[in-house]
Length: 141
Image (cartoon, rainbow, N blue to C red; front, side):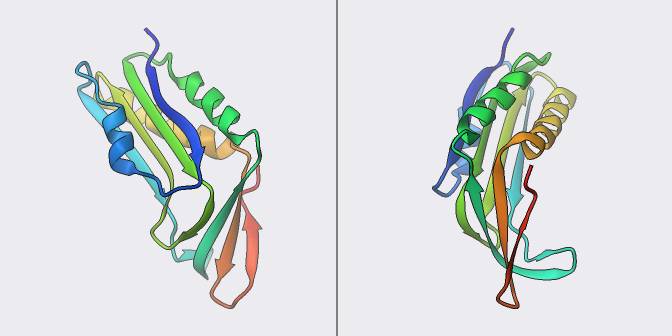
């Protein structure tokens, strides 16, 4: 059975973690695992004050395709994944993933593998604003 893809998109608004979690609700699930990738105040020993994510026009299509690759996993019932674009401050949620599955191992493994695949594939670039007033681009697939 193929899992229901509740959400697979890119947004310029703040990620609504509660709504995404609710979107994967499923009575067959014995586990729901979530991941929130947040903006931290440092990177490789350098102070960071914020981030801007810039997405290629194909990023929503790529997100949909990537999430679809995980919909056939055994025991997985529902998946939600959303990535934020635009400027985010420290603590802002850049990527949120929720997976509902029959068992915890299925949910954990699917969520972990999905996050890795999104980071590898999604055409979104990260511009980090540094405390010294400069910026740098990183994690460009």
